[in-house]
Image (cartoon, rainbow, N blue to C red; front, top):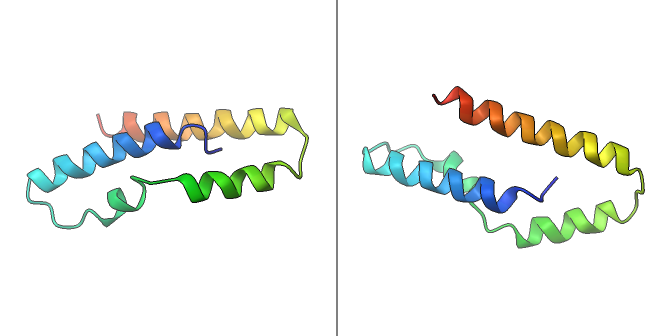
Length: 76
């Protein structure tokens, strides 16, 4: 689930910076999701080590990617 966090974080950070440039004051959501993600990645690896159902991981990964695509498409 965290494989794409660095890319997601960079895009969210850029969007937050753009919002700031427009003098939008409420950018906490962008800051929250802009990283760093090292601690979250370590925790995710610890949790993933307990499970071996790769098909479930693939489903979750595809779902997360779809949600991200829907998010960015919703901004258009």
